[in-house]
Each structure stands twice: as structure tokens, then as C-alpha cells.
Length: 393
Ligand code: OVV
Image (cartoon, rainbow, N blue to C red; front, side):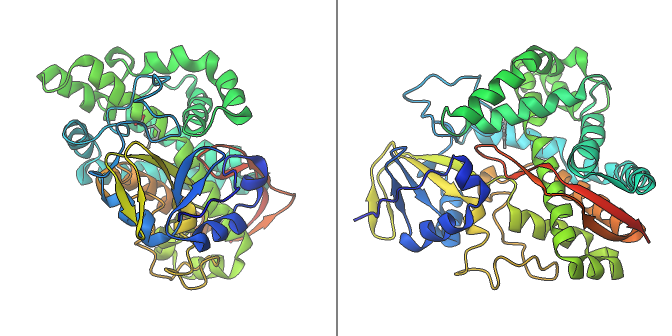
């Protein structure tokens, strides 16, 4: 008997404090049923991880949101990366792995670090500011579109676009409707930015389009793959950086540790991704009848994976709710794992590392000066406002 729980994981009360519900989901059993949406869900670390690794049983090609592409027409052209299974997935993922190769990322370290130093210097000169728009949004909105090869104008349009797509993985609720209304004016712009002609000859975008020039991908495929970068590359890192600043402000002893050893910057970012899990959830669809914890789920069922709950599962983590930048956290699932594991994680980690290293070297204290405000999204966890004051080192 699969336990049924009366939990709505896509409502404001849940987003305001998901942790009691996460515990209830984990404690109810390895798999639970949520009648409100007629879906199954897993929230324990072991089961979330097993599901992420078993792409054969848990398909992405029917969409990684609530909507089943086998029953409902997808609202946008499906992603060739996120919303596919092998063999198509491996072909597109192979190209993206090349685009985001270690050599490509290494070449970005210097410019990304310089941009982080310059931003923290400017923010220190202000003293007080809002860490969401002025830091967590400002930094990725500069370095990421630069790396893709986008023009300087209108980059902020990427935020409402990403907000809409990440809302679209949940139900058609008020958060989704508001995000669609917000993004409607920028849809044509984003579409146009994916074209070869819109992109510089040196960035990630040009590398993707070169594969179309060579004939291994069609031009249309190249454009949809550039769209993946524009969709998944900004809001995610915004919420990752927001999580890191929010953690360091709430755990001043950890910030002291980081100041004493700025080489902990990468670990400090990783731990913020574990604890806050900027990407909270994704769905899969069962491609056959599956058994979880002795319970059978039939083919064609939507299953919700609670990455954020797995990352705080006391079965896996000691003091799961503590921000501890020295813990062994590499196995967290905040970036997913398996064949769909975040392809941009290398870039996100670089951004997180250089921003936190700049804070570690230049800042003596981070103080929250007013009540932070939560940003509501069906997939992403983060804040819309985090007023802070920095004191210089
Ligand atoms: C991981 C992710 C989120 C949103 C969009 C996409 C990927 C995409 O490939 O379009």
C-alpha cells in the first residue's frame, strides 16, 4: 500500500516552509502518492538518487514537469537535452559537453574572477544594497551572456524567461500564469537570440552553431540547444549565488572559516547548493511498471523527485539542516546526477567559487538589514530580496 499524503508542493505555504512537509514525505515511505495531482513522489536521498540514475525506467522524453507529453501537447518545442532519452539525448549532450569542456571553462576563470572582484569592490563602496538584484542577479547577467556571446542589450530579459520555464514544470497555477504574463513580452527576443546571426563568433553559441555548419546538427537543432543555455543558465546560478550569500549571512562562523581560508570558496558554494537546493524538484515518467521499496507503480505514471528533500535527508546527512562548509557534500543531488546531471554545473561552480572567494578576501562581515522576501516558483527556490550591509576587511 503506497501511502497517500495531502500535500501540495506547489503552493505558497509549502514554499514558505517546505521542511516539515519534506520530512513527512520522507517518513511516509520510499514512495508516496499525492492525490491532489495524481502523481507519485520520492523524497529520500537513496530513492531520489536511484531514480536519477535509472533513465531506462524513468523517462525524461515525456517531459520533466507535471505535464505528460504523451497526453498533452508540450507548450514549447521540447528541449533536445532535458526532455529527451537516449539515443537522441546522448547526441545532444555530447555536443554540450564539448561546448562546456574543461578547456573552455578554464579559459573563463580569469575574466570571471576579474568580474567578481570588480562587482564586490563596487558593492563594498555602496555598503548597503539588495543582494538579490545587485549581486545574485547582476553577476550571472554579466558573465554568462558574455560567455554565450550575446549582445549587451536587454540581458535582463533572460530572468522573466527562465522564471517562466521553471514555473512551467509545475501545475498551471497562479505562479505559472503570472510568470507567463511577465515573460510574454520577451519571448520573441529570446527566440531571436538563439540564432547564429545574433551571437558573436567566439562564445558557446558559436560553438553550437559550428556543429550545424559542419552538418552534424541541423540549424534548427542548434537554435534549440542555444535556447537551453539561455533558459537554464541564468535563474539557476542567480538562485545558487543568492543561497550562498544567504547562508554566509546566517552562519557568520562559516563566513569566518571562509575568510580564514578563501580556498574553501568552492566548498562553501557547493554546501549552499546542497542546503538550499535552488532546483527543488523535477519529474520523470515511468517507462514501464517499476518497483520502489516493494511497491509497484504502473507504466506512464508521473513521479516527482524532491532533490531538496533528498539533500536534507537525515538518513544520509548528519545535521542535515546545518550549513557546514567543511562537510563531505560532493554526493548531494542539487545538480541532479546520471545522464541528465547538470551540464552547466562546471560553470555554476566557477561563478560560485570566484564570487565567494572575492567576498572572503574583501569582506569582514555580511549583515542582513531587513526581512528577506521569498521568490515563489514551481521549481526554483530563492529570494526576491535580501537586503544586506557589507563591512570591508
Ligand atoms: C535544466 C533545464 C532547465 C530548463 C530548461 C532546460 C534545461 C532546457 O534544456 O531547455
